[in-house]
Structure formats: C-alpha cells, structure tokens
Image (cartoon, rainbow, N blue to C red):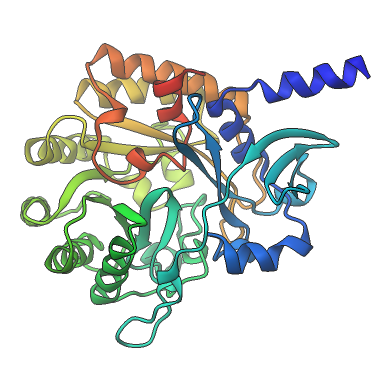
Length: 384
C-alpha cells in the first residue's frame, strides 16, 4: 500500500506543463459510455474523431490551462484514460491510478446556431481553450489535392467541419461566440490554396468581415507568398483589421529533411521566411510575430534549437508543437515525441527568448495566447 500511495503522489506532482506534455505524447482513451455526454454537454464537437480540449488548473488555481489532444491511432494503447468520478467530475488515470483532475469546458450555446445559409456553427469554428476560438478558413489544401502534402498534416481532417467556409460564415460565428461571452480572441488559419495569396487573402477578407461585426483580437497564420508585393499589401490590409498577431509557419528547421517531409513547402528557402518575418515585425511589432515548428517528424534537437535561436535573433518566437500523429496524415503511424523531450526543448527555447528580450506571454491573440497546442507558454509562466 505504501508503494502504491507514493506512486500516485509522484505522478500527481507533475507540473502543469509536464501533464500537458504527457497528454499530448500519449493521447487519452475515452470510454464509449462517455462519448455521447461529452459530445452534447461539453466542448467536444469532434470527440468521435479523437480531438478534444482538456483543462488543468493553474498552480494558483485561478485559471484553466488548456491541452488540445489529438488521439490518432495511438489512443487505443495509451496508458491514459478518462474517468468520471462519483461526484460527476472528470479525471485522467494512468493505468490503474489516478493521474490528475481535469475540467472540461461546457458546450457553448452558439455551437448549435445556424449561419445565414444554414450551416451549424460548430462546423465553422471551435473553442480550443478558454476564450479562444479557432477556424480553418479553407481545409482543402492544394498540396493534398496534387498528391504532395506535408507528411505530418491532416488539415482536411482537422475536425468534423465544413471544409470550405465563407468568410461571412466565420464572421457570424465569431460574433455569436463573442456575444455569448465565451470568445475573447480568435485564430484564423488556412490550408494552402491554389492562387497567389495561398489563402492569406481569404484570411484577411474574413478578418475584415469579423471587424465589421464585433471587436476581438485576431491571429492570422499563413505561409510565405511568392509575390512579395502582394504579401506586403495583404499584411498591410490585415493590420487595418483586428489582426494583432501573425504566425508565418516554417514547420521544420532541419535542412536535411525539409523537402522530404514537405515536398512542396519544403522548397521555400529559409531566407524567404526571414524576409517575411521582417515585414511582419515592421507591421505588427515585437512579441506579435511567430513561427510554428512541429517536433518529432525526423529532425534532431540541435536543428530545432539552432532554428529557434536564428528566429529569435530576428525578433521571432518559435511556437514548438509536438507532432500528434493524426489519422489521414502520411505520418499517421509515426511515434510522437516523448513528454520529456518536449519539456527539455521548451526549457531551452524559453531561455533563448529571454536572451533576446522576447516574451511569449505578451501576445494578444491566437494559439500562443491560448496555449492549448503546446506547453511552451506554460513552461515560460510556471516552470517545467
């Protein structure tokens, strides 16, 4: 009994950041008898496709820290599973011992509203953490359509959604969420479209329509454009909307695997990213320009940390996100990075940001402010 008790104390003493990293490294098994309740009463519109938001209490107990979990195939053998206890609260157990308490956000009312053209709003945008709404403006990626997708990407399966969304539908949905007081900031991203704007034009159009309806900070995610004059024009237009924060996502710093992992996007020179980041910094300012790197797709840690330093020296913070092998991606069977590896990388990256006077906690909108997709901000705030 003494040994079992101390094992429980040991696993329960993990930090918020470590718990989130453990969730994302392993996935979480969901009992079949809970799925219906989670889907109808809680913020789990994609629970049947293995996507969910679990919340942990902050160390001071004054806020909820989200962990966005993509189960993929691995959840069937995960040591973690969800339990509803006798008091109606939810817990995560590791094997046969309680690991931690969790909180699930309640299903917002606007999810069941219809857009003007009759689409259920949870098919347009979803809550991915307290106050954080996210929408993928277009989920039909041209790279997928021509058979050369980024191998970690499953954007067409991101959640049970309308694959193509009109900017007006997203604007209506954002307005409904803000009026319900469950949306405080918004992330807008897109798959790559087959035009010069690569989808950034649609994101900017969406932001403009949102601004006409409601005032809310927005984040835009995009990839570099071949036409730099068009990029400059679109970013200037974006700044005239409520877009406060941008992320031009490089995904992988490792030159040895970039083109293997990303057959088309990997051809974009890193210098093009640097030039794009510089333009973003001129327009949006310090602590509001980011790039995303996926950890666990074949790169080594040295390439990540060199890249983090290179980006930081150019005023850009790298949002490190663990690869969660998703069904529908080429790499759906790949082993995810371990929680311990992620924590070590987070600690090193946070140290680099501090060296260059950058602060993850300062961004006003989007995935970095929300924090659900990575524990890097939690390491910056609370430690590892």
